[in-house]
Length: 181
Ligand code: GDP
Image (cartoon, rainbow, N blue to C red; front, side, top):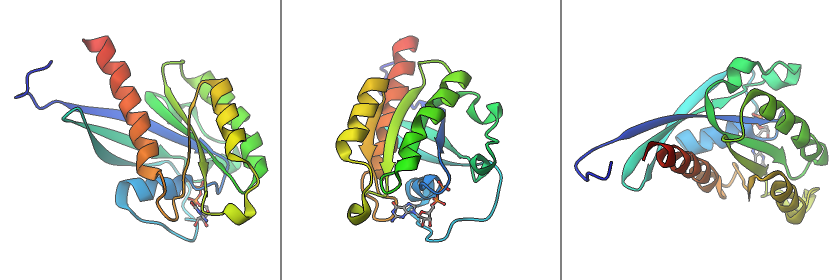
């Protein structure tokens, strides 16, 4: 496994979940294409995009799935979660209701996957400091009590977006290589 000449490739599925309009699609488009869209997309249906991160000299590809609006109809299917190695649970720091609903999303994730799935709680829209409705400490405490990684991001100004995905991808990579080695 440690042969420097060997180029190894990994591909892992990651899902993004959370209430409608918390910024899931924009986090993904920021990470995968460095793009931000001020207007929500109208398309309904699951979509994914891939992006690679270099970890320990290896190319690790993430196939990241976006609910693309399914959650509005409470219709995120088990196929969406199937085979996922990681999950980003997103809320909007300027809308408390989306933070309350994290518990529901976590239940749903747990019912579709086992505890080895790398989980990150993401408080998005941290650029909206003036209308903040959920404190940084509340996010941290929830993550601690549920055993999740935690970060605040802004898909709008790019704050921590790359870091959020990279932490999850690195954790997956570490989990998998521990089993393989
Ligand atoms: P989704 O329904 O969770 O996929 O959310 P979208 O990515 O479609 O974003 C919903 C709305 O929030 C859109 O109008 C975005 O422009 C806006 N938005 C997304 N991320 C951010 C962010 O980090 N900051 C701000 N201020 N607005 C954001």
